[in-house]
Image (cartoon, rainbow, N blue to C red; front, top):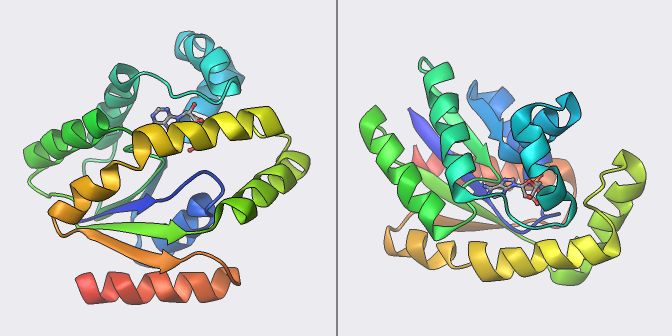
Length: 190
Ligand code: AMP
């Protein structure tokens, strides 16, 4: 089993690349943002709980995310691999993920970070706001999401560097070129 964490700030292109990686390798793509947005649009109890937090660009509680991921691993017990996109986002989530994967007997294989400068990130997120109409892509909320990233998520870089799992790929260029760089790093790690 190969467990890939696709890492990077909002707007780095994790979602687009995660879909391609999962397709190529026959792994399961898990986007916690997509899971949460589906709950919101279906108006489930979980969706109602997280709607305001997401729309403000803040992080949903670790407790809820861990519950979601536990059910993901149960649901996809036969998976050959996972591409995690948007999880973990806090140190607590990373530690809980390690515990969950320990139970499955397959630790994190690789943490791949997409490197994109902040100006490019904001431009991409504003463009996506127009194209996809995401409620959390307004300028104010984008700022919040980047603050959350710097404050809560960036510290994970050191966590995974210590475990010698952290690799970087330059995330600016064509979708295909970036995908090629990612694929090369994955091949080297397998
Ligand atoms: P994303 O599509 O990954 O940018 O996620 C959209 C929003 O969902 C985030 O801004 C958070 O509000 C929430 N979210 C997604 N994944 C997580 C996570 N791992 N921890 C906390 N909140 C999350």
